[in-house]
Length: 112
Length: 113
Image 1 (cartoon, one colour):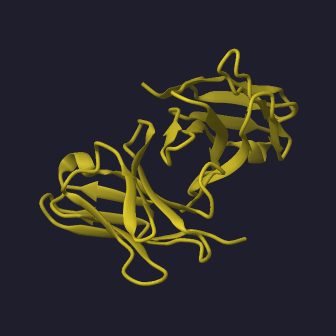
Image 2 (cartoon, helix red, strand yellow):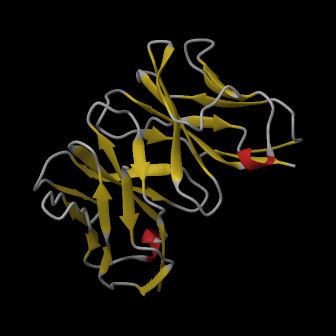
């Protein structure tokens, strides 16, 4: 069935370190892909999205490229900040469905 | 920036009691959703709602659950007879288009004792 597999944390990095969070998906049909972020005490916020193959989504220094051949949507940031400490969720929507399928989420802590 | 507002932020209820979780979606949005996250598990889809009716629901959304848009602004999730396993964080979301991502609220933490 439809599912998302993402790196399990928690992960702790130092400020200015490079971040990669791997995400692969199994979807029936051609999905739109998303990364959501949840800061402490807040709701899920859309971080970035990509709706077709080879699209790159970007926001706040984060990037992810829709790789159809590897069914992946890995999240990267070149230099993390303390304020990036949060839980990151990979998700997709299959066309024709309104159901977002989420990964388990990965908690990131960035230390000064 | 427009927000989805959920109340209460935390609710404790006794097993077997009815609960209503409330949400105020973004005012010009047309699509409304409920998701839940049991502690330590994935965020799961419950139901989507458009044009005053359910458009899609998951197998979790059984007869114990119902949704309603009682007026032009609120969107509610009712659980008729709560069970211990209903304890979770419940997220409301809304969107103006499908497939473009949703705006989520901060969630209601429901604890059934």
